Amino acid sequence: MNADISNLKEEFFRLYGDRENEPVLFYSPGRVNLIGEHTDYNAGYVFPCALDFGTYLLVRGSSGQEIRMNSLNFPGEVIIPIALNYLPIPKSWTNYPVGVINEFARKGTAAPAMEMLFYGNIPNGAGLSSSASIEMVTAVAINELTASGLEMMEMVKMAQKAENGFVGMNCGIMDQFAAGFGKKDHAINLNCDTLEYRYAPLNLGKRRLVITNTNKRRGLTDSKYNERRSECEKAVELISVHRPIRNLSELTVKDLWMLDTCITDPVVRKRAKHVITENGRTLDAIKALEVNDIELLGKLMNESHDSLCNDYEVTGTELDTLVYEGRKLPGVIGTRMTGAGFGGCTVSIVENEHADEFIRRLGETYTERTGLVADFYLPGIGDGARKI
Ligand code: GLA
Image (cartoon, rainbow, N blue to C red; front, side, top):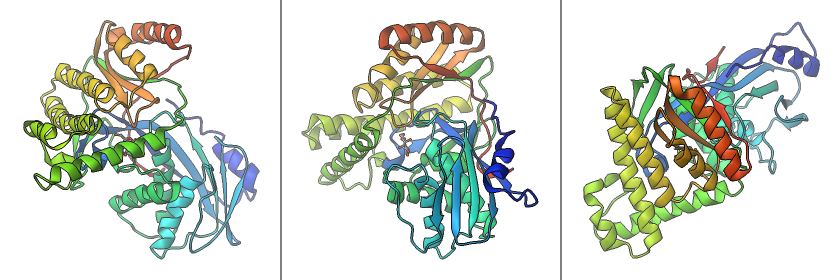
């Protein structure tokens, strides 16, 4: 997706004046997760890639005692007085950048007075991590403006903290990590327990990634997400009576029998089963890509969706329609939901020669079934957050 950032600078000067004083441009990508869903907060493995679209930020220091924030995506200027401690503004998009500025302040680095203009070309609320990309673009910009010299890992953790504590979404670390550490044409194999990671070349040969947006508004995502987290914590507590564990990712498919012994609630049991099997699938998928077995990767993606649908129950009619109708089409190697679920996007591996047909036929069927219009993106895999 090409970003139309040509008029970003013009808009910056229109808003803030003073054309003599050049702003600096920063960028952070969104992400798509190939497999390893709802495993990050269970200290498991994930396998995301940074996209070649994301959030741009033009910024410059200013005189005065305030931070002026504008976005081409959301109308209206928000003015934030410089503080030691910031407070969230209910329902405002500015909570993502201000949450990060607040994390810098908590570390003793006060952000300077600034003029900021954001522009993102990731569809909002589509599960492609527009939030993490706003957080990470802010982090790299403040790091540079204040000459803080923080490592990327530190900023990733700060951005996740901002989202947990300031925005109030209890997410894991995958999205901020992928936005920070993304690498062109590579997927990231991340162990969310140790934060060790390795890059895996994403070489799909005659196939490509297709992202399909359900365009379903994700109303209750945050509360459902937090509910899943507590169900996993419950499972850990119950299993620990028999065998002490810190998190579900310490178990493998060989331990699945324990779920029947330890957990009486069938819902909690299913949730734990998803996490344990998904972790196994993710490791298998990483190996499959290493030996370039894309058919196997696709099969594991299909199984991942089935598990998210039946055991974790985070899909819904729209995502299931895209996935189960998509699988009937020629040239589809694998297809699954990506991100938190409950709406948002699917990611599919489709043979190049069938991509147009996939988009046309799946688009038609989806509208017939749901009354909604899907959007299709043919993403490239890009680099992580940086100054441009
Ligand atoms: C959201 C969260 C991530 C991760 C995914 C599900 O994107 O922000 O931390 O938990 O959902 O895999």
